[in-house]
Length: 206
Length: 223
Image (tube, rainbow over all chains, first blue to last red; front, top):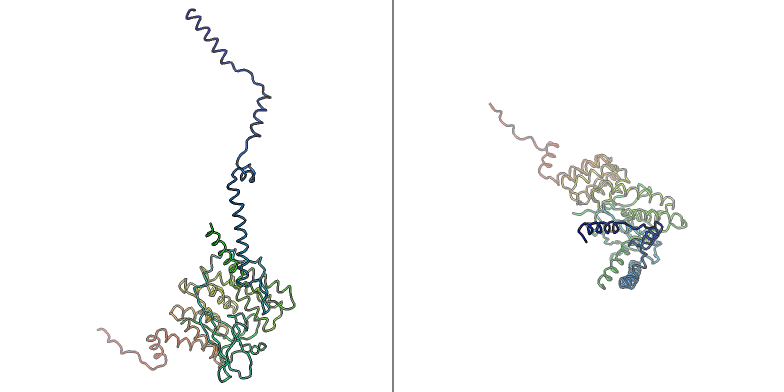
């Protein structure tokens, strides 16, 4: 076989090999659709299946999640009980609706209240006939139970020391749990909202 | 892990206490609707980060003086609104006590701008509780808002202590109770406090004003 014959045979072989056989377009489309259906991205994967695939992780969140939830509920209940938020009040007050929980709202423009401390202030009142006297004011929300006064040895003077925050406060004396009396030795002021009068105490840091 | 759970438990315990710490709203006898409305006002104020003690205290006081439930609710709403104004007027970081005292001042028709001016006239971290209280008491005694605001701001700038401001407002009120005119009482007591704040200069000025001291010898004229 001469060199020229070899060349022509080689060219024919190359030509045959380069020819692409015809592909059935229907078959080609079926293959593409099957591949698209089988493909699953992480976002498409159902959560349950993902946790099933990583069984260890699923077990972790299952057991500890339940434990943490139980502790959270128990802690909240303990918080309520310690504070007494659900206890009925003897003085005619009711607990506020839990739906109004305020601590969930971040307060960024009010300073911490711990900066200012109350100062002890002595209230003195003279009354010989009373059986029981309390000082009531905005500093104790007009609750007679919080500041009962002590009678002096002579029986005429009643006094009590009450922690009061600096500033202006209004108050009075509750005599025998029924009569509100103003302090005769102190300034009085008319309440701008209700039009009634109350004694005034100014508590100032020296 | 157990430490983490313990911390979570303690945190939740404390936060639940904090959330419901002041959560006692007076019952308005015989009016469930008004009671609910009052609770709603308190809750709304609390959710805004406002101190609710003034609302609760005024509601209880109103009960003591036999105000009607509808009146109590209206007053509570007014106080909540004033607390918000006071908080905004006393920025950048007012403490709850200042807000409460600012609310009282607003209730005596002190303008919001005065609160802001007082805040600017004092160091940012210092409390305005006593100056605001003194201002309220002066206005309650009958001193005009403008004059009382000027005087209190001036005294603050000159370093009057809380105790001095408290005594000052007491003294003015006592003078008024004895029959003095409020602005006269203010002027007289102001003179006394000024003397205490700056003994030498004020005493000298007072002596001149009453004719007890004569001006110093005249300087010889230069040729």
